[in-house]
Length: 254
Length: 216
Picture 1 (cartoon, each protein chain N blue to C red):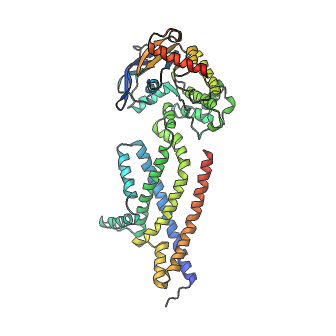
Picture 2 (picture 1 turned 90 degrees about the vertical axis):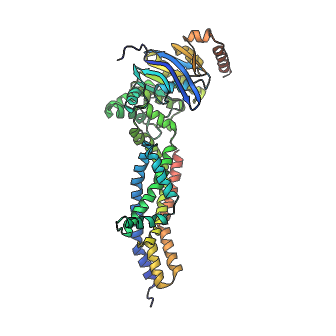
Picture 3 (picture 1 turned 45 degrees about the vertical axis):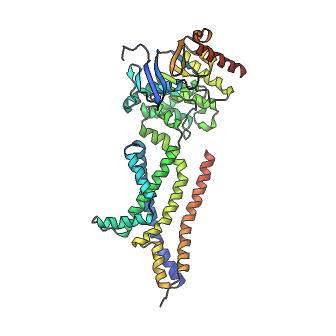
């Protein structure tokens, strides 16, 4: 392994534009092993784009992005295949494969990419389903599950590749309020077990409870970084103070 | 001295029916194979080969099949081959079918939600694995009804092969008319036979459409 980088994910001067619109204007961020980092900020602040750069779903124009000491090179399919085995992702809209059973959703990538035998893959899938509390859903199809259950399967599917870090992109935003809890519980358990997580979220209470560090993004830049306690109780910048007051107001209304 | 009885007319038309079926089947199969190759090339190389394939599709969609048949038949002759009407018609209809099929299927593939591509990319699948295990199985479901629709079009369009002298159902009808001078009866029978061929496929296509609608 490359020793010069301290963090598992190292981001330096990252810039990304969609056409003429610059979305990321020079991001610096380092995420250590076993760290849980939440990214908060208004929509349009670039948080999802930043997350999607880390596993190469978005191509950035300049700056450096290293995962486990290896630079992300989206033009090289082999490098991307190696990268994506280290970086798992869970999406807002679950994105389970609708034509496959829950078990096959989880087993597909380990069998294809890691050449896992069908027997081992089945054991792994069963173990992971138990971990997300869905032991009995192995043969169900995605459309037979609730949103919360689908998202838990998506988490199990990401875990099946045994990644170094899991990216969560607003994973509770598409859920009915009463289903948010079951998904956040699973993520909380992962955090306790020492899984490295980078989480884009609007759930401020969750961020406060689970994250080691909170990153506040504003207009394409990392505006403020700190422990959950620092960020939520003593925000330094007016933008963050404003963001927190608006979002806490919303939560009380819910 | 027309000694053609009604039965003679029908019998001769029925005897030519296998040629229409044969031509349809070969054109359809050839179209499927070539269309699939073109589809995969178009997805894997969207910028270079994909552009060429788009033009290929436009060419076949933007010119009458009648001209395509003439050009294939006489074009091949000009190049020094001497194609039989069967070979020219088979080739031309296969190209024609491949253009329409690849365009239809490409639309089906493009209609698969972006999230499916992103999720499978994120799981480190390469493009070949994504297509084989995630995208094509879903695209296949939605592509069946329009594909059956195209099959019906191809069956009907084989009638145009009569102009380059390929003796199938329509050409046989023309020949018989020249003897019996009873075009309405002969062509009426010909039309009914096409209908009898196409109708079951149309019905089947509609059933499939309904079936896949429920599944979604």
